[in-house]
Length: 159
Image (cartoon, rainbow, N blue to C red; front, side, top):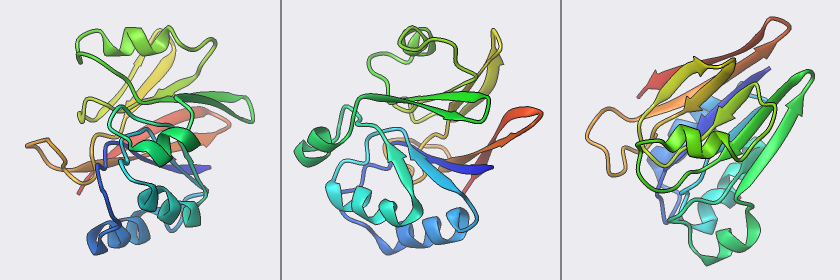
């Protein structure tokens, strides 16, 4: 299974660049996860054409806050994935987020705008960064999760 992963897009409208990005990178994914800070409802509505699962971020506006939960857990076969945005300082962020879930194989999060793909204590911590480059001075990034009988692995893609 191939899952596309976004976070921190910070868009108030669906731009042509965002449409092109999704068309190019998510055409062969079975699911897209968005780890919060879409900002506006039109972005979520656009992503539903890709079968999206999303959580709210700290910058999301009213209609999204009412529609999206703060965290979700998914099970794909034997693999359990947690999805959450994050809050506060980047220092200690992973520990704060990990404490919100039990028995995960993978924790997908956002908030820091920094791409992360590493394992700690048997859990894959995965942050796709920001695909739009919002508030970040590095290269925009997005991510992919691959699930198969051997486990879960992540890939960060620079745009």
